[in-house]
Image (cartoon, rainbow, N blue to C red; front, side, top):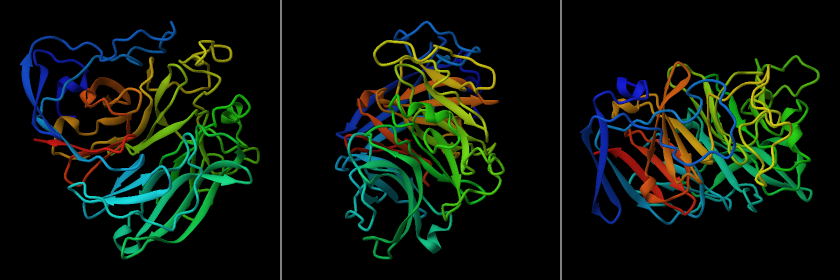
Length: 413
């Protein structure tokens, strides 16, 4: 965040107009030019409601533009409904495909054969093989952790599994399910689920509340695994130090609650704080800074309405004791995977949050200062792709996957 214009969400005397030209069938070059106009918020569509934000800058912040020349390259178009992507220590990428396979892509986008040995998934609707992360010691132990929708006794649930990638990279060895977010429910929707390993070596992952009026209240229920951010050990036990570990009326693995459908998790590279993105209904997509033990409100408070147009519950947006989102979207962008940019390759992106937007068909760049969003940019809108996940590669470029099976590289020109 070395660009002061980006930090304050304005361009004072140096707003940037991006020009792009095709240099090949799969590449767009972006070149900076100067202007003097202040940038307006990137969202121009009408909101779904007349709800008022809790504080200035909670939604529709001023726009920013990247000044560094960068290029967008399509590396591959043959992935089968990819869902999660993470970088490997050698610069390659491990990718989950919704139907239940993992693939390795090299830095040029060439795909390896599907990796076998994973537990069965329920790939109907929003289910399937979902988020993944590799062990910090992957170079020596080759351990992988992933979340998925698991069929169970005619129902299904969000589960976490682990296994070892074989030396020939053809299969997962000793795969085992280490956690199940019960209760199981017969639904094809709202599983979550991203997964990462925190600085203490424990697993943090997210669940959805399964998108049903019957299960929705369980986001507020501390005896349920639905609608939660959960923190466990690598063996699936409640992690030491969790906020409810000494509370007999709560599950000790719960880290935060009151969530609708969290598909983005990332740790801020400077503060170490956990951030998430979650889907609202019709309006009310949220960006939250997660604090242990806090209640994030769903379905008691929301900036969204039902898909039918009716109000959600008592139509409350703020309530004492319930956390406000740092930022929200109305209309929605359908925020999926997220990542903080850590590299110095594009200095103005340093510590910015990047969000893969599905219905928004872009990658959102949020400039954050003092835990507030102070600027927003939309990248790759011209691609008209539903972006499912985004990560940073060892080369300081962003890599993104889309529902249609494309793999993008976005890096300095």
